[in-house]
Image (cartoon, rainbow, N blue to C red; front, side, top):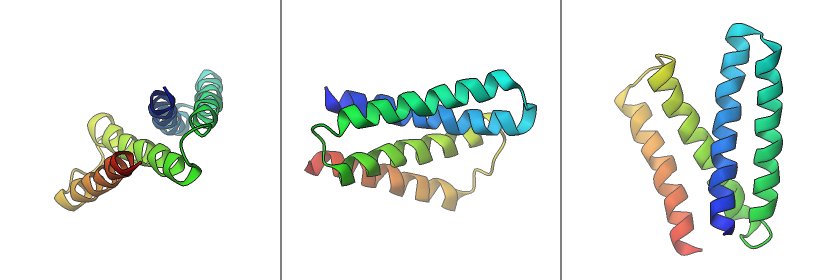
Length: 104
């Protein structure tokens, strides 16, 4: 169950980063409220996951999901660069995240 909590936390982290970009473009207060909610829930689920998963692994997976997801969302929805090196390093982050899961 803790890995599910960690994945939820990572997805909420990704949502928070996406909402940061949305806030930057729109300056709507509803976006800042959703952003705060996403990060609060993300930290909550991360703390639940860390009851069983070691802190170093949990934090690395959480940030890996957030960083990878944020980069992919940026490329798909915001027209950010799809350079092959950028994609390569996103795959490296994702591979390292999966690797941590496999050895834990």
